[in-house]
Length: 611
View 1: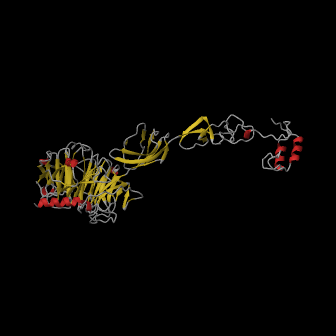
View 2: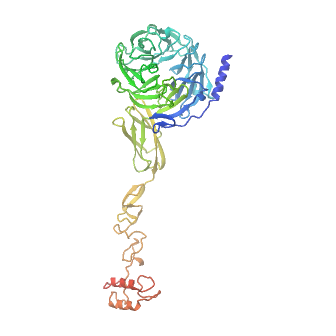
View 3: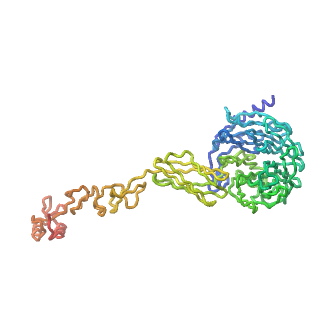
């Protein structure tokens, strides 16, 4: 009865928490809205009120193998929430799997074969099993889900690891095996059974378990657990758990200023280990955030190399994907660093997003965890007292012209930020028929590549191209909008009279120098000759109609009709001088009077023959 009432209460909270997520806020000039950032955009923020006021802890992800839909799994004090992020700008709250027993700050979970396994520090919680394929058909979200199975082999658990290759779960910090590894066979997900344990080095805070394929040939093919054992004397614990009934210690190590070995990850080549000590900063053993680095090429003899300084707050969790490590550092938020030069004890900052902008104090607030493994590149991060943020690292920037002529090749410059490693591939969503693409990757990073788009003739008007550029381990999306203009036929206009000739043309959207939009010029060297030109009275066909019109015929001031201008014409002119009116014989300029101006015109033609 109590359980039923609890579910009704959770359902009420969910129904009150439906929301429209915030729109995308790009990182511009160091800020995404109020949040300091560098090369990371804010897609959406799920506030505490949207999950019933709960605090958050771990965050993980599931990609449906059926249709590649991405789901965020968010740990909360009240249970586990599920969000469909098909549209990451508006994540859909599908519902909650409530806690098995009591509310708790700590909730941990991992996935095996589409089943979610959930543990908590809450007493009597054990391990819940939930079939994630049920998220495909949620009729009326948000729902209150029920578990599909339950494992009661322990009461509480701090963190959970799963080796997906073998089908074993490793519960850490339980009330069994001195808090060491509690190993569960989950090969039949709905019927988990205990398989063994490991307690020789005391309490394990967290572990990373894998079928080892690293550089140490002695252990290739073995199932290896890299354990981080809190406050024990030698907390860096490497265990061979190939046989869960006989887990054996490979090595135990430590490092300077050790206070609480919290969590860590292995580089993808298996050669190096990154560790976060949660309390060395908090208790002042060091004055800055240290990421501890080990050489683990030899699992029997791990070697402390040094540390990377990354701020002043407390580090909490980190995950490696490809050449990048994604770190969750409490009040500093998300930090992304490149591990390419880790052999030199160098981690190179790539990007960050600080969703706790009020301060960088050494307190247990801000970011708990991130999940960087979605194919889309969306990175959900949990903020203990401020819900969840969906972030998008932006390591590719496209730039180019805002307008172009359809007969030209659209050249887009693509800037590849440091940390985005190749080889690279270009994908474009829905390429129109006839359009061709050429992708020229950068020769070095950071650096520029290019996208060349041709065949734009049928795309007149505003167009938006959506590009997906994939690298060695990441995909990044960007788009570019361009107005495609209709090209025009232009005619060579040597004399620049506004008319050209048809035997010399260019096609372009803007007027080329020395070309005109109209044709029909019959004299390319005379700017007074073109279709429709006024006559110049110089016996020239000015208007190109192949006739000499009246205004084009040269004037002849032959007053006596003998076809030559002589002194006799001047005498006749003198007789007409100062005549006014329409009947003046020598008013050559037609200004209504015979005057000196007309005399000058007559003298200018003196001695010339008239037709």
